[in-house]
Amino acid sequence: MQATCDLCARETLEFVYAPQGGRRGLEVFLCSHCGLVQSLPRIDRAEGRAPAAVSSGADWGNVRYGKGFRTAIALEALGRHTDLSRELTLLDVGSNRGSFTRAFLIAAKNAAVTAVEPDERFAQSCGALERTTLINARIEDAVLEDESFDIIHSCHTIEHLAHPAKVLADHARTLRPGGLLVLDAPNIALIGSEDILEEWFIDKHLYHFSQATLTQMIEAAGFSILEAPDSRDRINLLFVARRNEAPRRAPSGDPGEVAAAQELMARYEYLRAENLAALEDVTRELAALSPRRIAIWGAGRLFDSLVMHGGFDPAGLSLLIDKHLKQHTKTRHGRDLSGPEALSDAAADVVVVMSRGFADEILAEAQALAPRAEIIFYSDLLARARRKKAA
Image 1 (tube, rainbow, N blue to C red):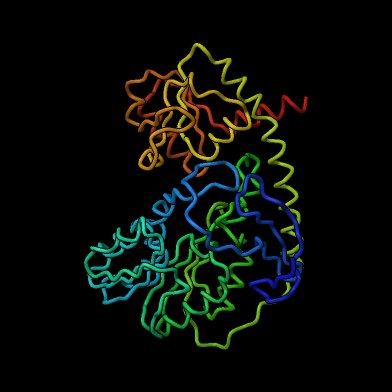
Image 2 (image 1 turned 90 degrees about the horizontal axis):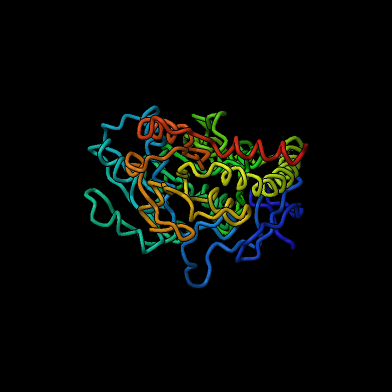
């Protein structure tokens, strides 16, 4: 498939991977010049709306509840680089359910927000907010004046766009001189995790950034990086950048990034296959815990992997807990979802933590709610199962 890389604009895309369980027929390519990983064809909008899914495959999507987890972190980062008490104008790109817009309006009493959100299911979350103008459209289609904003906030949106480099350049156009960009995106480094189970290359994501490739794209669009991502965070890439007045610098080739991406993709395919094959042994270890009462905390993509690939039957669970997902769906694989408060009365003997990014938070809550319960992390179950298969 002939296409140009959206970062370096070269026809140097090479096929590297076919995602599993997708609905759009996307394939993953690596630019052999700059190292940006991207999916083709660039289907950034589909006919009709697919049903909400919390699948561990590439068809995961349309629940859209993850952006709110990043609000406090983005607001704290913004506060390190500007005075939130002064008069400000902010563009919230992909405002979703309005989590960041509401938090920003509370923190910045003299600010005004323009919220851009194409999904009619959620756009009106910002429609009635004070000091807020709602544009119910895609960011590519929104008509915005030159130098009209002090800040642009974009959380987990850039990876969905057909041409993110063009949108970033437009962000520079609409920012005032010295204006700030707060940009958050998924980190491809996650696919090298020892406990990877889920299909990371989902249908809705067309670009798969590393810190190096997203840095290049931000700088090429006319920004200087003020705050780089936390190197300990393998899930997200959070940048704070300032519009600069220097001539834009064309992206350069990066053989080291290309080699690193090739190695990462090979590691991902190997690890995920090994881990999915080990899930049946994880299921057997959980079954051996009977007749102890088992609660699983985390009903998302990892849990789906356990059921779909490991043959786990949720019917025997004492509880299935997910305080975030419970707000958007009542059941998962035939089991009712419960909030954490149910753990206090369930007398669970074992709590299995099926989460990666919130594992420490869940551990603390579970210990407080069920102090006598044994806490087991899915990553430990997976590691034991893999050792068993290798023996």
